Image 1 (cartoon, rainbow, N blue to C red):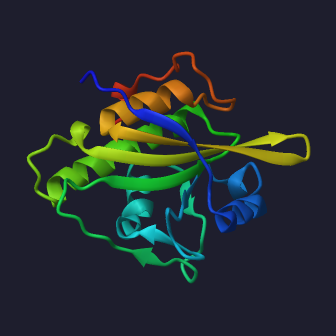
Image 2: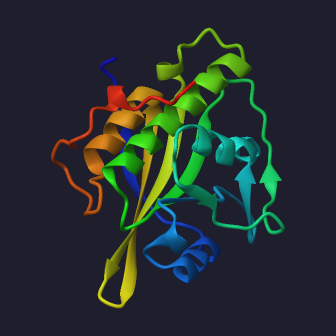
Image 3: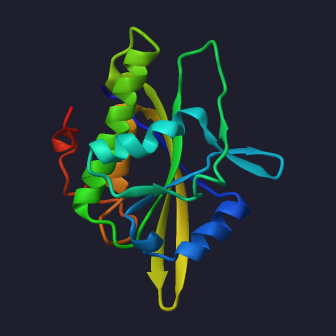
Length: 188
């Protein structure tokens, strides 16, 4: 595949930013937090498919949790006649390791395989449309800083762009990452 993912700057809803502040740059000891990615008025929602995120994360050894606890989470399921887009948002910790980045890539691929099978499209998993809003939380002195990017394209182009942009335990980077995305597979 020769297509490239589109990568652009983004902002998070104020409510999500304030909740992330409560966790700090280490995200409460987790490598990844699943963020609500739907906004309707003053309310934030998880997409309906996010119900499976914890199980998918566990299957690929991704140390992840939801930003909101079970009593606060609300899910919004939307339907479309077009090819189904996988869309989710995550925050990654300042302490993210290469292993966690590898697991995040495997998580993206797992979601694409399920989508390809569940919706019964004649589209290969690596070509499934994917949109990931990714917030990197870094520690600067006594405070934390955030940078949010949206990665959008085919699953493989998004995985490639994330791998090239997100350097474990460091800043955003434009140099090639040190992880082979082909090695990032889940156990199924």
